Length: 89
Image (cartoon, rainbow, N blue to C red; front, side, top):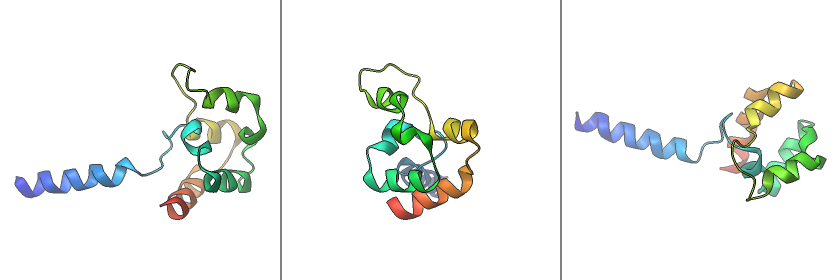
């Protein structure tokens, strides 16, 4: 049982910093490296006034998630997440 708990805690630590489809747009836009990757995938949010509103700390939840954005614009979420996690970690 102790080994299972240790494994589970290690998994939680790994997932804590992993970018997922539930990562908010605001979190990603804080990173210049992430912005470059998002631009490579033609994410229209980079110049959108709504994205700037999304980054406003006073904006109440729910916050727009990268998975939702990809779904709206037909962006390959799996490829994007793979590149974000490889290059930002």
